[in-house]
Amino acid sequence: MNIAQEVAVLQYLDIQQENPNAPNEELFNRTAESSLLLEPIEQDQLKDLVEEWMHDSNKSDSKLLSNQVSQNDNDARKNLRKRLRNDVLKDLAEEIQGCEKKLESLYEEVAKAKAKAVEDQLALEEADKEAKKAKTEAPVEAANKSLRSRKKTPEIAAPANIEPEVAPTTKTPKKRAALSNEEKQSLKKFQSAMLPMLDNISNHRFGAPFSHPVNRKEAPDYDSLVYKPQDLRTLKNMIKEGNITEVDELYREVLRIFANCKMYNGSDPANAMSIWGDECFRYTEELFDIYRQASTRSQ
Image (cartoon, rainbow, N blue to C red; front, top):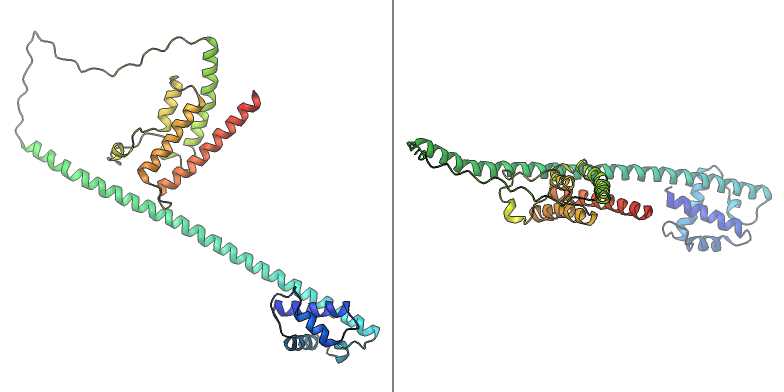
């Protein structure tokens, strides 16, 4: 018998024990209508199952199915019920173990499928980068060959009395006003808290692509799609130089990094960079929430 049939027989024995004077037909009828059954069953089928189980248990005795029984027969019924209950519990335990093994197997298959999808996506991205690189390098190499084939034009020396024009140097940032001791302490406290936080984001398992500026050779169209590039290394330098001194300002700039990732790579859940950006974004929010909560408690 399967578990559902064993439960039906066990339910019959329970109802028989609770109603020792009820006729068998009523017991079979009440058992068939019980809400505790695992699946519907007809009275005739139930009767056959009860007789079959008693026969298999070497307890086949018509008196056990009737209500005219002695105390010894009642004890026999109780023993039968106990044995059947143990069988049901054993079968249920085995069924549960089987289900758990199936679930573990399914989880492993899902994890492998996800890993394979990420691996395939990375392979596609790498192939796409190689194709773009080859497409970009081909005309550049042709142009270089053309230039090398031309005759060099002699350089024209500048007159001795005219100094050559010096290319303008990079503008130096304006000197910041001298900070008071209180402002210096506040800035130092801000730096000691925020720089390690940015390091934690960089050290995240998916944080490497966001730790430095995007390589324009690998993404030549990046500036045409992203209005204001940003990266964690640049933010660390801005903090060290005192150009960012507020938590909210830093938070906005960090979010800009992941917004740029979405802008350039799209929101396709199968895109590896999109997945990495989402993971780092959630991790960043957790870090800033922890910092804000700690700051609130310390006030």
